[in-house]
Image (cartoon, rainbow, N blue to C red):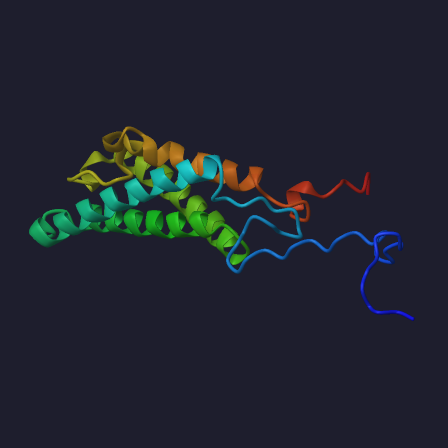
Length: 176
């Protein structure tokens, strides 16, 4: 007669079955079945912080310049505002760090790098084109070259935290 109670001398039928892994909490990006490491942990937190500070500085400066004397150098101030918006997008994408946000971060950091290089070259080739400096002028000189270095670090971090199924990590099939 079985009472349904477990007795210490009786073998547990489920002893050989490993426990099921705990499912992550909603919004928890620390577990990813594809092997992708989150962009917002470890060094990524510092990266997000630097992006947030630069986003705030660039956006606030650009808005102030546009509102107080935007007619003096509208292109320069508009580019600074664009840079600030890109930094905001990159900050959010890196902080969220998973799925589509990784793609958004790749695009934002790439756009940022192209922007700082293009505007940096333009300000050296034709300094008169930008009567007032932008965030990206002279490769970000006014911001301690952080606008030049930050997207390179951001892109490296995205590459470093990529999953095993992303193209850069696929094995070579050999000669074609």
